[in-house]
Image (cartoon, rainbow, N blue to C red; front, side, top):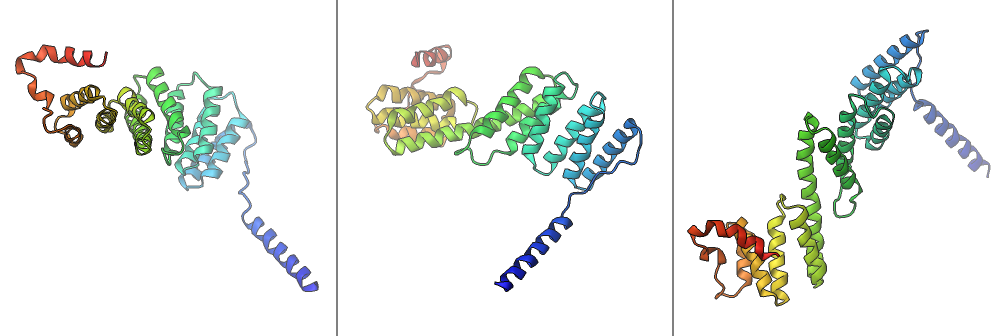
Length: 279
């Protein structure tokens, strides 16, 4: 019993020593007036950021805001703290700082950048689109906001590109779920998922497969005319694709490719025909 007591004391001593060695670096400001303290803290934050100590950098930037919240350095410091966290993948902390910035300084000239970095943080948090859509939806929300409120900025150009990638992710999820329902022979839920791809994500790479799956499902259900309509749509837009060839194989050998029946001089009638297919 005495041995166990001594062992506990020894472990406690080691633990307390370890805690002391990992004690956070304290911020000491030598300047006396507030403006000089603010400048000193900001410069210390920049130096810490350059050295890779993002936590100490963010702490200094936050002190700048606390010392002089009405100064032009306060919003800059919040953004610098947010960027410090972002630079080392502390996305949750960066998001908190950015939301605080947007709330306190909605009309600041750097607000577009704050929204962009916020959207980017959520984008970086995307891990598995098949399980969690929260980060994807938040990222899409803020990138769309940038396009709406700040369409003429450089951030808008990058937002458009990121939205294409996000839509591709969302389309892949719809296809994944559609194929799952297809494997379970749940035809209607599967059909709805593939229709979502055509309706909401028509510019993604998953449209071809979605149309082909609709050909398959309608053919299985005995709705051959509907199946042919989707095959025509697929052939008209993606005639050289593998998915069109797969759709062509769904029908028997007597089924003729409808695209081949269209004469060259009927160009004006083609668009009208395809519009009427889905009325």
